[in-house]
Image (cartoon, rainbow, N blue to C red):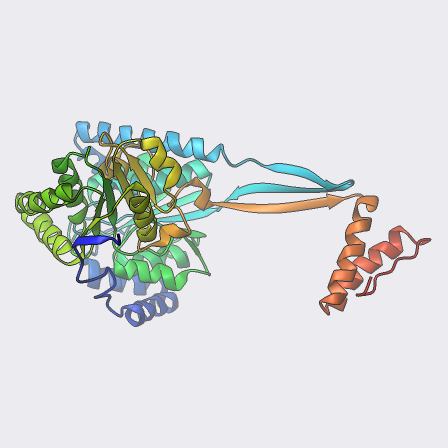
Length: 435
């Protein structure tokens, strides 16, 4: 039986995507040409902020003093979890060397980017967790210089908790600037900063477009769209918890898709009954977002069996994938396309978003088919090297000369010829394309 949609989304997450590219390109061009002064002009225009841009030690300490002690403890707890997980990830990257043929040794080295720019949203929500996720992983990776950039509030500055968190996690500079102007400042090395080698972190459509345009001259974590989440649930799932988890992700934004895939029609129908009640109980701003996301982007899909449910999840390749179903090891072994996987009722996307240790900067809009999320690995360059004895170079040079001539690349071939002539003057080699 084909998938049955109890609820089908009338829109996709890109249905109303504004054409922001020209706007963003114009801002980037103006800031690159105008430098610090141009960035400050855009900050005054968009952030409505004219205070300190590069925070001093005194300003950082003053902000930290405003953060309640219990919140500091929670931030420290989350930071420790993310740091431990990042350190374990880094241990999976090993420098290696192997003798390919006798006398020819090749190797791999992991080298961190020197300068990382970490964008932390601070508009509608102050994303404390984004500072933890981006700065901590850059620090563990070994980046020599880390800049945190976050939008300031008019007349106030960056939310004190974000300042405290960025400092705790290892930011070398905290920049009170948001949007395209913040991304540009980190990329172009304004305000005395080193030019960023990589830009990471979530942001609105203008931030995402700026990263997209700049990709190539600077590295980025990924192309980001609206956050999305999918839940797989079988008859053993608690419908109330499933509904709460869907609503919890729908509040991200009006165009944040949430999907339920189940093999239990009754469960799907019950969840659909519960969701509107849970949304209605949210604070106003959260309710408005969740209502729109549920109305326009949510789907509830009924499948015949768990194999079909798994295939459906892989087709959607969600940013967040939750499994509330029996036989969790089977799902872990079977599912292949997701940004981060949450197995069982005892964990939830919000845990990963905030404090459990895995990263919340994840692939959206189906990108999980080919990439994972932010990790220590994103900041690391995997480079290779080789060295050889003259005897070790001999068979490689012969093969290289013949392959190069077959490809019509005579200059390449002659770099092999000259070595063979020097190292083995008394030998004759057939280095023609025909071998």
